[in-house]
Length: 341
Ligand code: ST9
Ligand code: ZN
Ligand code: ZN
Image 1 (cartoon, rainbow, N blue to C red):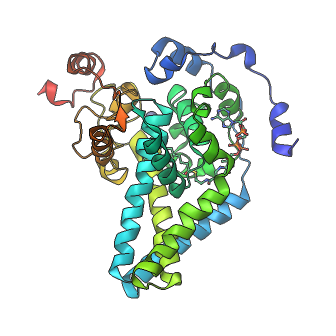
Image 2: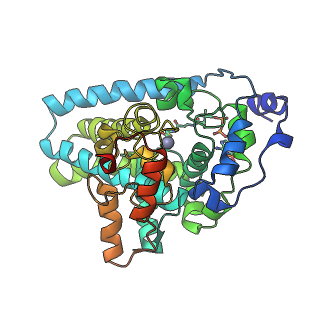
Image 3: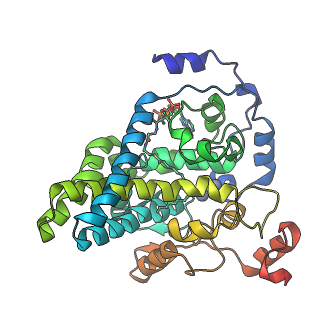
């Protein structure tokens, strides 16, 4: 048993206090009763700061290399290389937003296998942990938001919810309370299992080798420029745009749908996270495939899913009826919704 797991095993056991296993619907439809009971049981085990130095070194290197990538982009790279890096940011971002997030974590729409395969490839390019691990953490985040059982608990501050949580061992509550969250449906997808099984070699190929060599093959860019711009700068940028949803969008912005929760409508992340910045809406109605009541407005991910639906590859897109949104806005909103004006 690795030492960190052993340390956890010695933590006081709160199993008896854990809420009963919730049906998957409660994760996607925000079953308030179960959630509030589960949340009231959180915050019991003391926080520990077991730093994972390997991750600290990797993240420091990645961000320094990304800055060097900016320098190269401004001084010696071809413009096509920078444009392709931007395209890879959008593509890999879709693997997170349309893939791990809206499809696998929330099941807010269904996708035929060719689309699931494409999304899994895009997702691997984003290198944000396997679809299974990402979705498990994300379901736990929704169910236990703003408690110690939330992997990136925003009450621990901007840095922790942004990147700090990836540099420390998880809080024991994440593991203990996380057990009640059923993720078997995610693993039931053979594409998810395949990605998980060969994750690291696939990441090497999709996140690093393909982005590095494409500009070299297509327009004779140097491997050096290409590696720092299309691989490392693009990767670090996409990571930060994702992390801002956990940090900034859990701190700053309006709360038109539910003022009692931290997630907010954050204008910057609407763009940076390609349509995932409507975070107050998303935590209120997590099963809506558009993560917003405004459809494709400011929402590249919704445009992508709708395009896939047009080709018959996406179907059963779930959304919330306007009446229900209006009632909720009037009941729990902070007054910033246009309905109030
Ligand atoms: C990255 C992920 O960046 C980013 C996620 C962001 C999410 C954003 C969400 C916002 C909404 C959507 C917006 C998208 C916008 C996108 C825009 C794009 C343009 N439940 O994890 P371990 C158990 S990754 C239940 O190792 P440690 C489980 O048994 C970046 N159980 O914990 C597990 O074993 P196994 C690159 C759980 O040892 C065991 O515990 N990657 C749960 O404390 C051990 O798990 C990195 O930097 C749970 N939730 O280590 C690597 N969690 O898995 C980062 C755990 O076998 N990761 N268990 O079942 C690590 O190195 C480690 O995870 C650690 C913690 C050091 C952070
Ligand atoms: Zn979500
Ligand atoms: Zn959130």
